[in-house]
Image (cartoon, rainbow, N blue to C red; front, side):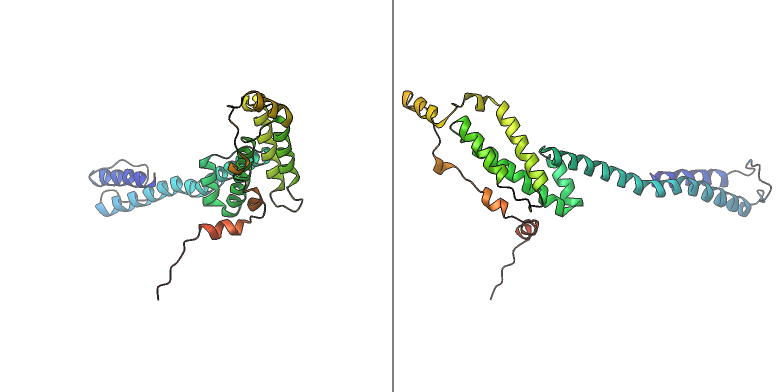
Length: 220
């Protein structure tokens, strides 16, 4: 933007310098000579350019900061309500607030881990027990407690609305009866469930930063 304004003023300057009798209301300059016209153009151009750029210099940082705060406020709102952050929002945190990015990433990974567990539930009762266990497993000292509880509640709400939950039998006993009556029904073995929730509970933001750091190989 500033570059094009400089170009505009240069065109004005060249136009005025090419005129033998430039019109002007100013009597402070000798416009009959090239030197006078040059001084006049320089002073008026600098004044105009300054009046245009000063507001930009004052407003641009403020505007950028406002947009940053708006984005951050939206992200914090989603974290507090348990919503999943988009890739764009995570990238924004990664660039502007690496610590909060690490916390948000941990919360989302733990929410995803609970969703994976629920996908292996064989009954409504078992699914509800998984949710209760996940919520109870959040320590009062966990720095992400508020976000984790919100994320777990969001996962629970969405799962209870899903057709997958509605199709589940009510209890393990009902599930066993269904399996007996339909031996070909597909059930996922417990051994197939990859539960890394315990690792995530003991995770710290520093660990995320260390894990992301490049490794160096020493050659003897």
